[in-house]
Length: 89
Image (cartoon, rainbow, N blue to C red; front, top):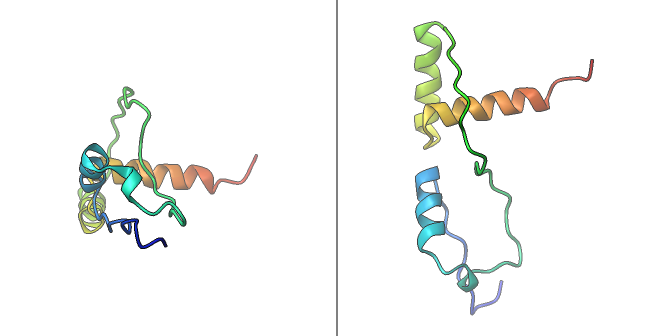
């Protein structure tokens, strides 16, 4: 890392990421070893309604809160990971 460049901050929530991107001068940061991050860019226009046990939703909400995420975003992450792990038919 160059001493003239700032280290990347440790952003814990998606709101922190959004605020950082909106306000930071990214040219001031060290681009030598960027770490991959997950951020949603695609418009979320489709609606889904599903039923699940309240206890399952409570677990999802609690886990999302621990990760600094909104529970809907966390559910999308879980579904995407599940889709990526599927074996081809």
